[in-house]
Image 1 (cartoon, rainbow over the protein chains, first blue to last red):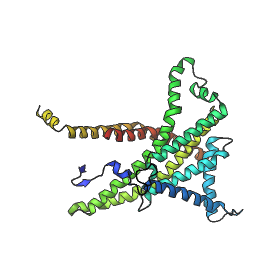
Image 2: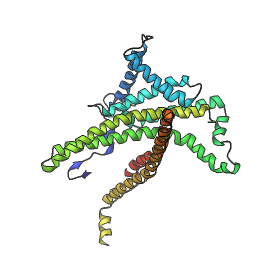
Image 3: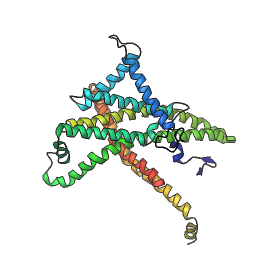
Image 4: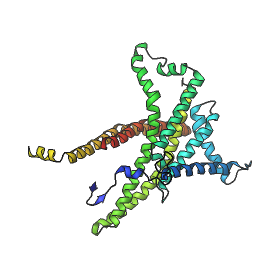
Amino acid sequence: MPVLGGFVFPPVDELFRWKDIWFEGTPFAINKTVILIILSSIFVLIFMFSGSRKMKLQPSGMQNVVELTYEFIDTGITRDVVGHDAERYTPFLGTLFLWILFLNFWSVIPGIQFPPTSRMGVPGFLALMVYGIYLFVGFKHHKLKYLTGHLFPPGVPKFLYILVTPIEFVQLFLVRPFSLAVRLLANMMAGHILLTALSLLTAYAVNNVGVLKLVAIPAFGLNVAVMGFEILVGFLQAYIFTLLAAVYIGDSLHPDH
Amino acid sequence: MSTLLLAAQQAGELKAGLQSIGAGIVYGAAAIGPGIGIGLVVGSAITAMARQPEMQGTIRTTMFLGIAFTEALALFGFVLFFLAKS
């Protein structure tokens, strides 16, 4: 679809679909996304191991960083949001946060510049996992009262249940996991498309003749600025995903507040 | 009348063009409400932080929660944008 006289933006599908490298055609095909996912998992392992082996009372080096990260999740997210009996959820939420963070940061690493979280597989799977966990926790701690407490919230006039119950049902079983997945997906996808468009515009302007060459300067400057913004977005989305997972789990544990 | 005839001849292009316009309207309309909403959330959070700086941590967490819930609508619009285009 040519716009701007010769400047061609590829169809969106091309930006997110990578060719299979090994095992083409099988369900276990490996492409760039899968490699990045595996690499990020290994990085999370290395990060946590390097700080938690040979722990010292007086932390130094890597142990400092790991302890800071853990404390950030433990005090900032779990204890604040989940409430009492929270510390058992910190390992899960910490892993979730670190993994999403590492996956998001691929979008600004030169030469790779593709966040695997912009494919529905990753955020969809994570959201389904959180969905399963908060439903499980809710039913385990409150049995059937979890469902009735949510669908028929106390303090609401009886005749309003006609309105409230369907809304609460859709909210609890459909909107929550869907919005959790789509939030992460759409943010990373938008960032990737924006970076691609600006890079292509820069390349197009540099290869042009005359006044159009000057467009390259603001386009490149904007590209660098957006890249800095992407680092912020990657961190923020990992934080928000973990925060919302904690909120949903906390809501299942103590639905009355 | 002649424009209609022309439109009939280039039905494919017309469809693609209308789809693009529709997709643009979808995202633009979906961004209005959340834009106002996020503005309200952040504005109130800043007022609260200025009044009680010692509550900053809690307020910031709550602010991000509010932003996340408000933003969801805009993101649904973003997904609908791609659905409307294809």
